[in-house]
Structure formats: structure tokens, C-alpha cells
Length: 272
Image (cartoon, rainbow, N blue to C red; front, side, top):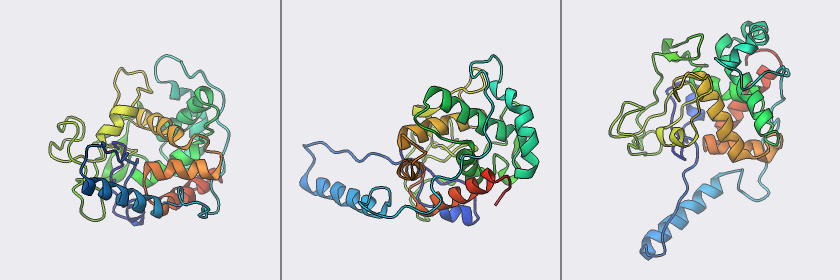
């Protein structure tokens, strides 16, 4: 995600729901640009705004938004040494099998929501929303045989398609020299939460105290996603705030509805 998301590698209905990829890049132009360029920017902006139910004045918001909060996450020391999410092992282990979510991934979602509650209580992001995104993006870090290690590392790394402007995706030229996503020509979405390099540079955090900020670690990715969503949605307990956040993550109403459906199911204690 630069400020515009990428397409994850899923090739199911979930992928079609995500075609319009992610965190929204800001269109900016200088006063010295030629009139034609300015007109093009204005038209593009109007088209984006017209397509977005988050921005259309009076446009309906899907029912069931935001999804239910799910089971409460117990209080923990969010500044604990080592991997703080380990404190949620018992809580996650009681629920992981029924939800069909790896224990480590569920710990990561719950820890990210708990940190957000402590550090930014006005955001009110809940773990089912993060789990819904993780499911749609990468099957919780297990897409195409990848596995989530006890400390959160996802191997082999998950990479999205090249963002070359085809198949309804955005064209995003390389922003990291291939250092993070392995592609020196175009950007690709990375890891279990499918960040693109530029967005990761802005929002990536170290959530498991291993000294690394890795999009391929589900702890880091989940907490980074929570921070991004809170920044974009402000108050995710409101329908408008939740939709603004999801549309920033991926500019697609179908994507938001798919995440909503998975999150609602997880909040009820089962997969979709």
C-alpha cells in the first residue's frame, strides 16, 4: 500500500472483491501544471468520489456495518518484553479451531485490537475486522501453502500480482528498488495483510519486539493495519468511519462487504 493499495494474490471470489486495490493515493497537483493536466486530475478525482459510497453525499452504507465486536480481548501488558501477543495464547487457543484461524494469527489480531484500544480508544477497531481482512487478503497467512510460525513470521513470503495496471488493478511503479517486494520494476502487495511498499514505509511497526519491521510477520502486519485503519476511519464503531477505513484499505465496496461478512461470522464464533 503506498497510499494506494495493491492486489493480493488470492484468486477466488475474495480476489474479485479486492480488484480495486487498496489504501488510497492522494491526487496532488501544483499550480504550475498545465491546464490539461489539471483538468485530468479533477476528472479522475470526481470519478473516484462518484464511485465511493464513503464519499457520496447521502449514499447508503451497507447493512451490518460495522460488524459486531466479537468476544472481548482480556487486558494484557501491551508493553511486555518478548512477543506481547503470547499473553493471549489461552484466549486464542480456545477460539482458533472453531474459527479456523491459526492460533498465532488470532493472537496477532487480538493483540493489535488491544493495543489500539489502549493507545487510541476513540478508534474502536475490533479483532473481527482485522481477522476479516486477514482472511480476504491471505487466508491468515496460509495462502498457497504458506505457514505462520509461532513468532508470527509467514513463510514462504506471500506476494501479490505485479501492479501493472492490468486486470483492473492500479499501476504502481517500483518504490523500494525491490528491497521489500522483490520486484525492482513495479510494486507488489506483501505479506498476510498485503501492504504495498510505500504504505509499509509509512505505517509499518514492530509488534513482536524482534527489532525488525516486517510485512511478512503477522504481528507486525496486523498492528500496522490497525494503525492505518484507525488513521483513515477515525471512529470505526460508526458505519461511516468503518467504511471510510475499509475503502482506504481497498477502494471497493465489494471488498468491504466481503470483509464485513467474514468479520460478522468470526464475531459469532465461526467462519463464513
